[in-house]
Amino acid sequence: MSNTPHTLGEEFPGQMDGIHALKVADSEFAKLLASYDEVNDKIHRAETRIEAVSEDMEHSLRKRRLALKDAIAAALAKARA
Image (cartoon, rainbow, N blue to C red; front, side):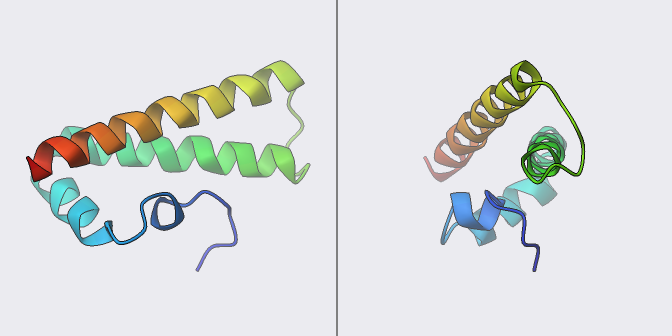
């Protein structure tokens, strides 16, 4: 298990089966998940000082992660409806 905070499992507890099912069924949702993981990894590398980025860039990445999380939540809600 990754030690990177804000993984999808942490952000959407109890919903990993639904996430997996939607990922398999919807290629756009799969791209959304990949984008989330990519941005989350960049934030983790910035926070742990593995990769130097400006404060503005780190803030921008956090906003992007939140927007992706909202899009994932909306897609999951739509799939359940």
